[in-house]
Length: 195
Image 1 (cartoon, rainbow, N blue to C red):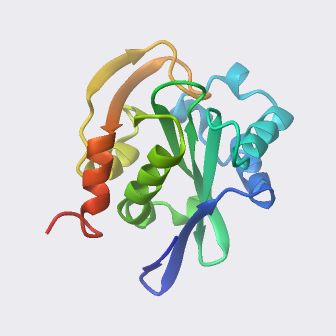
Image 2 (cartoon, rainbow, N blue to C red):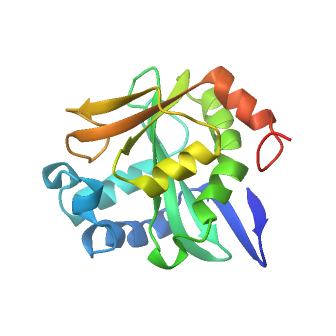
């Protein structure tokens, strides 16, 4: 999926193996603020652990109860990703990261959410054995919470999570839940929200 962003183009596509080195570098070479994100270093593991996780996100087909990834690009440059961890649960857990710091605070993530999240979520619901999505965001991460709320989502609950999804450690989170009806309503809205 590709859409205009000013004079540039943003695209979201299936994650592919050539994309992953920039993601591994993000997590292990200082691109990610591990303290601010509250990452559990034991869960993160080493570079090879991270590389294996991302290679698993490139897998399509069977089984359909694992995890899948999509890559964000600005023109031809890889700038971030989203992954959905299903792992046999009734809901998929959504993670979103802009891995190129030069593209932050430019409205890019909001544009990606508005233009692609409803379509991707609807696709994932139809292709994978889940009935909704969950997004857990640190309450202190004002930026991502602002982006998520800009598309009309509100936290279903907020509070302490001992075992958040992915590589995050315990902490205070906003938990956004998107059931199938919410996702389909978002997909039906014109780009940029309801008119």
